[in-house]
Length: 415
Image 1 (cartoon, helix red, strand yellow):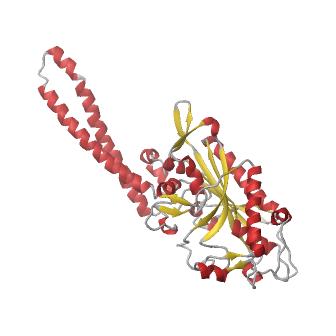
Image 2 (cartoon, helix red, strand yellow):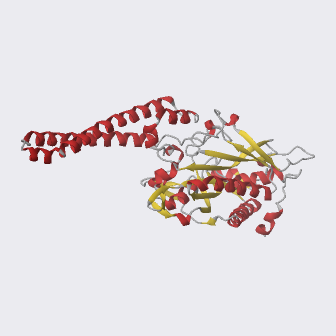
C-alpha cells in the first residue's frame, strides 16, 4: 500500500509518479479529494487540541489571580465535544482514504523506463545463441499430434478449456524440472518451504491481490478462502503481522506450488497450447530484506533465474519493464523471456519484482532496529514457470520427426 503520510505531504509528486503506471485520472482525483479532506480535518482537530492545551494551562493562573474559572470550564467542555466530533470526522476520512489506497498501485522506481505498455519495455541483455534448425521448427502443440506428452482434450474433458493433462515424458519432465529447480535455488541460498495452495482474505490483502483483483481468483464457495494465484502469496504472508530481528534479514525462500488463475482479462489470448492455463506449476523465489539490502537481493534473484535457464540451455533475454507494464505491487520488474522457435518469438517465463515497502505496509511485516520498528522490503519472482519451461524445452530441443531431446542437467532427474 502507498504511504499515506507521503501522500499528505506531497500529493503532486506522488501523483506524477503514479501517472507513470497509467493510473486512471478519475481515481487520482478521488484520491486527491480524500487526501485534501483529511489534511483539512486534521488541521481542525489540531487547532482544537492546541486550544484545549492552552486553555487548560490557564487554570493555575486564574486561581492565582482569583478569577472566576466557570467560563473557562465551559469553554473547555465545549472544546472537548469538538475534539470528539473532529476525531470521528478524521477517522471516517482516514478509513475512506485507506480503502481507496488499497486499490492504488505501488510507486515505480525513478529508474523505471517511461512507456505505455509492453512495446515500450527495454531489453537489457540476451543470453545464449538462438538455435538453428535445418527444418521449419514447430510449435509445441503441433509437435505432439498424438497427445502423448500434453493432452489438451482430456484437460477439457475433466475440467474445461485452458486445462491440460501431462502424460509419459511430459509428466516425468515436469517432475524433473520441479526437483531440479528447487535444488538449483537451494544451492543459491534460498531455503525451501512448502505452503498451502489455499489462502484467506487477509493473506491476499497482504500481498495486494485483494481487493483489486478478486475477479481473477478462484474463490471457494461459502468460505473466505481462495486458490492461490502464485506461491508469492502464502510465502510472503508467513511473516504477516510479525516483527523480525535485524539479524534474521535477509530471508530468502523458494517454494513449489500449483497456481490457479481465472485469466479473466485474457479472453482470446493464447487459447492454443499451454502458454496461458487456469492451473499451472511454478517455482517461486521470495525475499524479505532490509531496505538497504533489497537491490542486491533483487540482482541475486534475477541472476538465479537467468542462470537456471542457461543451465537448461534455453536462450532468453532480460527486459526492464516500463512504467505502463509494471504490475500492481511492483516498484521495478525485470522479466526473463525465453525463446520459442516454433512461435519465432520470446515469451515471458519469469518476472522478478521488488515491491519495496508496498506489501510490508499492507501485511505489517517489520523488523526491529534498536528501538524502532521498520517496514521491510519484499521481493518475489518466478524461478521458473514449469509449464513454459516444458514448452521451451520441447521447441528448442525438437527434432524433425516431432520428438525432442532432454537437457543434460535433467537426465538424472528423469531416471
